[in-house]
Image (cartoon, rainbow, N blue to C red; front, top):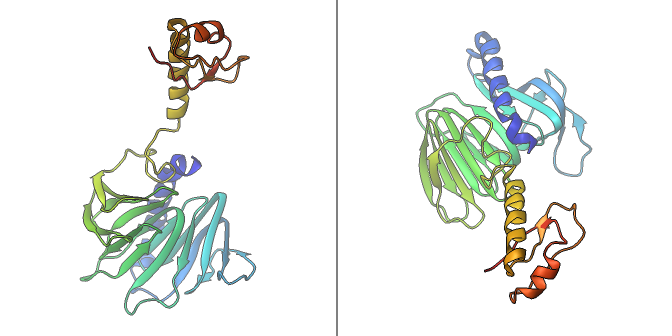
Length: 267
């Protein structure tokens, strides 16, 4: 998906914005978020109010729901804290906020966070499946349809399964993930840049289905000649399905016709 391919680019935007704004961000934190980058992004309050374009230099307040569209990007700053949204993503600044802490809901999409360090946990990002709780660090959260994940670049976070309450510590260079039916938080090495959990939460390569289709076609053709396979192949370029039975005769007569690609052949 687009999000996965562009995720590393948005990480670079985060670092670039951080470097550019460092002199002004060194001041003590303010209470509100300011918009420092806005491309194809809108804001509403989630209560049937009309969405409006996010304006550069504008303020974001509790209760605001921010959404980026295709090709969009949004960067918020608050003191030294930064939130960088990739395209096709959404966050909500929860209202009311916890006392002395920040809580952001991230229903979907890919967002990078840079959070200043404090003695206790003071910043939390909640996706539908995963809660990420931090004292201060740099991390990325990906909320997809079947898996939510946090990838840590610096420092350490606590990743919590929101369904079961199970939690795990995730350090720099690691990813913590929770699937739809998972009971725990799965912690492992972070994926290579450009192959993150962001756009492909199931962890499968975008070309994996195509590869499987090609293999199925080969297996299905072979199955037709041997008399066991369905000659079903997924290429959509042929004329028939080749629905072979396991008796060998029907497959021999029909297996050569199709080029459709889900080979189910048997010997």
